[in-house]
Image (cartoon, rainbow, N blue to C red; front, side, top):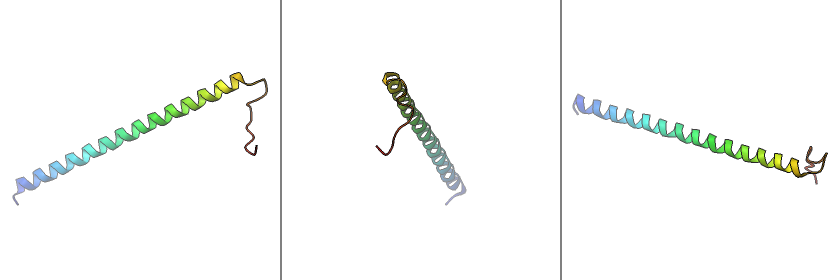
Length: 65
């Protein structure tokens, strides 16, 4: 194996690893964005429920009921 071929292989492997790391970072970023959207929806739902409940209700949840 010539030195130039070895350098080309190392360069290709390095570029592939860099691309994979960039893709993984983007996937994590998108997952975080999706999770934040779910949290926002849940908060909106909770606020909506509080708005339609009679005064004093919705402050605490009875998990045993």
